[in-house]
Amino acid sequence: MLKILFVCHGNICRSPMAEYIMRDLLQKRGITEVTTASAATSTEELGNPVHRGTREVLKRLGIDCSDKRARQIKKSDYEEYDLLLGMDAENLRNMLRLWGDPEHKIYKLLDYAEIGAPQRNKDVADPWYTGDFERTYSDIKAGCEGIIAAILRGGFDETDE
Image (cartoon, rainbow, N blue to C red; front, top):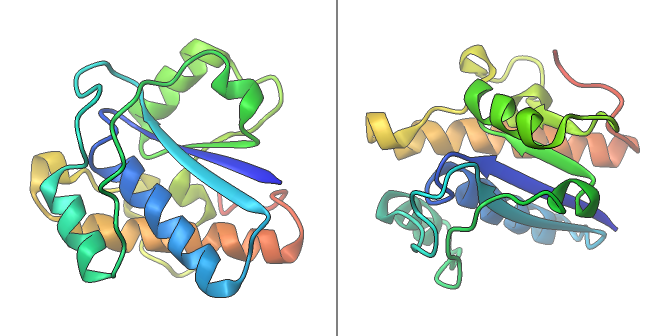
């Protein structure tokens, strides 16, 4: 079983969107050997539900995220998950500061976007500042599709770096 953790600053916008989009894409393809979760690098939103902008995107896609509450990453997450995906460079720095990366399993989500997909400097657009949840969705979908392509290829040795 492959376990993926998506990470952003507050765990109310980007990382829960990635968690639920990935679950939906996996389910639609009949891929059952992957589980997903998400977490924050900060404590600012702990216990809060998903941001309404993310909820609206997911609802439009027929995805329910009403059970999700923000949580912070913890030391044990590094051992528990096989792939830890930050949404931007700041998330990556915070993850590396907490865990290091001795097993080489920390990446940015858009490191997996397929060639030709919009990568926007390989950081997922942050809707907290822009309000543009559609751009965030586009970035996240490109990254998740790339992860699924890697799964179907049989591994994560090739990232679009």
